Length: 368
Image (cartoon, rainbow, N blue to C red; front, top):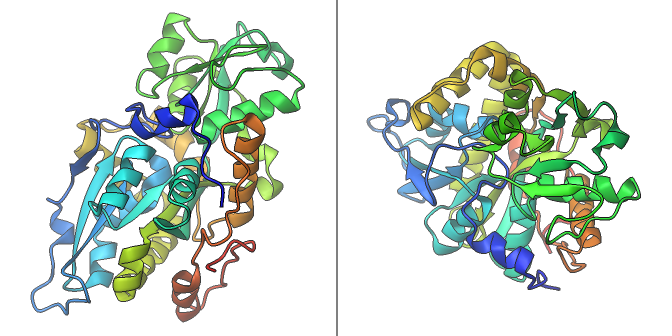
């Protein structure tokens, strides 16, 4: 299996502290959120094969399955006497490092960090065991400067991080327009400006960028500042679905504690079911969780449109992950690599069958 190309671009992915996919208020690394009363172990609850399970995720709407599942105690309910220990991260690479170091066992994460983590370990570090979210990515522009897609040429457009999921998607879109951009420098027919999502709205207000290809809620924050949605990335995908958040697990933890992994997946499936059945309550729950983590809830003008653009799903949409990897290869950010074995959906499909739900497909990239 080929490893990730040792370019400056991808070396940066291992150490950069900018947020790759999502808005966050945390510092580098992780922040423990282990003070939630909802996640207290019930007296006399039966413990599974591990005393605790350490999960990681980002404080962002595209990770709402984790936000809501923790906030509402839905994971803890499935885990019984096994304690859940949540931590939040500000970057995909730092979450992968935490998984490799054993600081977390299971994580919610974007496709690019998952692919990089898998390939850099020669397929030995992690498995993708489920899906969580689709969509929620938009190209938002200054309508005074950009009135059509062709007007993007010659403009300064932000992406969250060099080589991250949205950066790869934007570079691929640029290539399909027939325009040329150097992937590493971002210079060319379009100026790709890698900008932390925390400061992208201020960069937009100052005029230092003309738009951004970003996830929610950053996209809706830009709209609240007068930006216009020029393109929703979902329109570029079959059935308007593409993976934005996966669930990954340490292969060591999966092997040693399959019952705990199944319990977390049951919690995830039940959380997604509750989110989809109770969208307003779920949105409020996610916002409460965000407020606890950042000290500030999202205003209605931001969270309402952002929430509507994200779909919560148990399906990892495996075929779209493979396509995203191909886009990274095309952009020169990844050597052509074999992702066979990156998925192990057997535990999830066991949970789905037990719940009377349809099973999901690994697109031929299942466990070897």
